Image 1 (cartoon, one colour):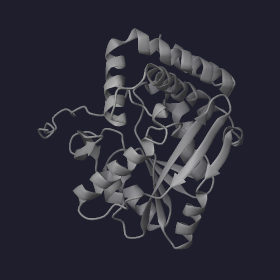
Image 2 (tube, one colour):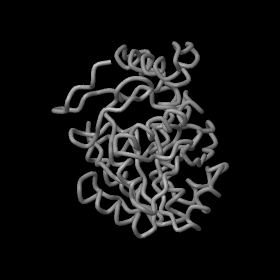
Image 3 (cartoon, rainbow, N blue to C red):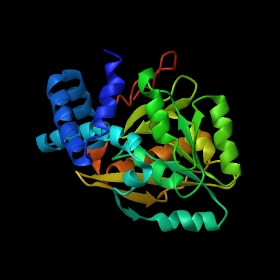
Image 4 (tube, rainbow, N blue to C red):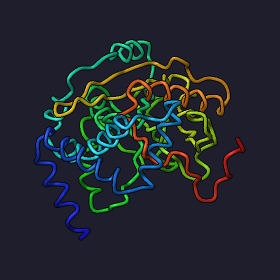
Length: 287
């Protein structure tokens, strides 16, 4: 059965983006109705994020978009880079990146699980050297496909360990770009508890540490999905630039990510178990 996964992945990569988005939406809705635990977590996280219970249409739309997020990966990772980037329909705010680079700044690109986050590094990597933190997938058989899809243009993958952190810092000191998913739940010792939509979430400290590098500038990216057609990339500088202690920087980054998510909430990965306690980590503070 496991050997069929790479074959299925390669077959899906031959389909059009429109067909993959349709299949993804169908799969997302099936999971929503089939898994009570997933449905409950999605609704609970949406309620916390929106500040109100989501409407039934919002729940269905979110589940469908999550499915599309997963099913567009075979296309992105296996098609020629030029063809994939040809689906970038518009880019809003890239001038902010150019202005920062003109000032000699290195870019800390933060991309939450919002819209099509995989397209962001490919777009940036076509325009400047970029080092991206990389954690191997649980399904080892698709790792060659994943690595080939992500290591394109001038992108370099850094392992999610101390050596990878050193490579990220080195890249920033050389004036290059680095990329992270700041809402990825870290392992024990790699994060601290920080409010995320009003509830403590174990949050990585790495993004905050990179923001402390002297010539680094934090820039927020997200790619809005246009169903069946592609993506519109949005580039924003933080409303609240990370500063102060490490803990204050972590809190600041979470607040900025919250603001970003609420611009297109149905394309966020609300079903992700963002509030889990890593094995061996201290429990969250009492609320």
